[in-house]
Length: 277
Image 1 (cartoon, rainbow, N blue to C red):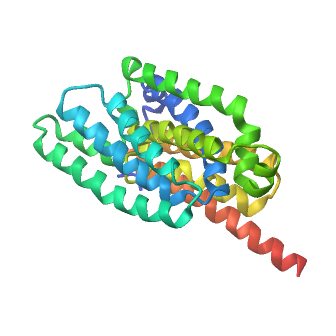
Image 2 (tube, rainbow, N blue to C red; image 1 turned 180 degrees about the vertical axis):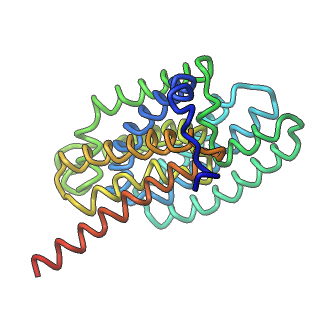
């Protein structure tokens, strides 16, 4: 274990990656809120599909010497728009997502194979590279995160209502098509950020697992999102802090913390059922 972890310079390293820690914390908040809607809408598969096109957009941007963030956003929003138009038709949505995923992954791999730059840049799009995020690169991530949070603040009630009980929401005058497209747009932007933090392959960790864990221990519409946010922040920030003591990518630590939280919540759920029985 001593060969893997070395926290002798932990304090200095924390100061060096303070910007990355702020990005990780903000992503944890976003992941907690967005994952709540994802779980309610049973849209986990769509998250993976959007991440593949986000990866393709980021890869093409890297090849074209364009800001990777904008490429990731373009790819995510394109996928979100396509899936959002058929969001109310689960079978069509799932089949369309299954078509988008291999296409996006194939285009992304092609772009990376043509890229002659640093191998770390290629690897980062697949597994994330939050430690390398500097002030310049963090600026668009902060702006995009702020936009998402503002949209969620003003539309959370309708989005959650349409996610939990779409039939009743429609009867109350909620436009399900508009809410579906809005949800997919929010999801697309969140995926664009997450791809640069944990990579296209592990984006489900922050946009599905927090709410999935919270759902194991509560059905409350207040405590569910709150716990999901706490789990998301703990996974993102905690995983990054652990990675500072090891010469390994940050993504495995984020996924491990997130998975551990889910297992603990699952065990709590099982114990509760046995006690009640």
